[in-house]
Length: 330
Picture 1 (cartoon, helix red, strand yellow):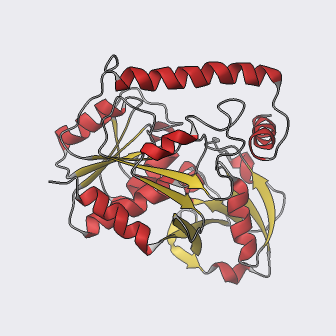
Picture 2 (cartoon, helix red, strand yellow):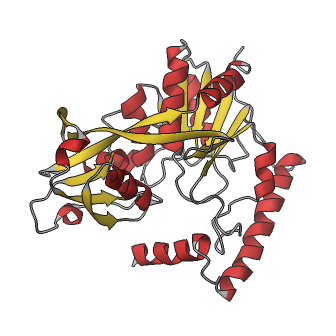
Picture 3 (cartoon, one colour):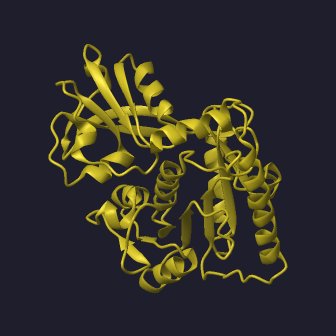
């Protein structure tokens, strides 16, 4: 049912299907609330909190994934390579916690941290704190660790946290959809918000803009990262491809471009996985995303392979984003 609902929304937001009348009424309410909430921060009636080190926001103005988490991981690695101590804060969407903020380490359960924060912790070896209140998460991070810069995974609309650099990401394929506000469209803020950020980068190659893109690097067996294979070695087999991300077709198309014969199994973004999701009544290999893999760590699954992606960033984009951040680090 949930997957059906998401498909219905996608048709309205991105494929020109008519918008239901009650969605249009709700859109007016959401749009007004979004506008006045930001105004309250701008005029000082709602407080913005300054953190004692530069804060970089990596976010978007639409609902759904545009590759924020892989971009954050890449950005952390770039700054670490330059010798900076980096911390990350995230909402920890999908996780249930008794106490916040929560320090996420590679051994943390995704049920507590959420899948994205755990993925960052596993890939970066940097302190990651999650909590609905990003201000408290950032303050706790600085209390426990010395940091030169904090990166917020998402949070462009979390105005309580003062920021020094804003990076907005857009999916080049889907753009801003029908450019309507929730729930009539995918917008959390209007197009004009993009004029106020420090950089707009597109997921997908656009020669006239800043961009980043993905390329499949290899696959490894779920539960044993030492067991690795080239994706091309699966070309003579049928593959069950499972993806619980915002736009699962991007994952499926990427595998098809590698010459694989795939059977698509789309799920909702952040959907909780069980062993039943992997029961396809055949012996074909199953390919999943790294984001979904962190939710399967405690499962005993056979013939499940995790696709590792390499993030490719336009040289000009790489240099400009690092220069932007370094200009804020004293």
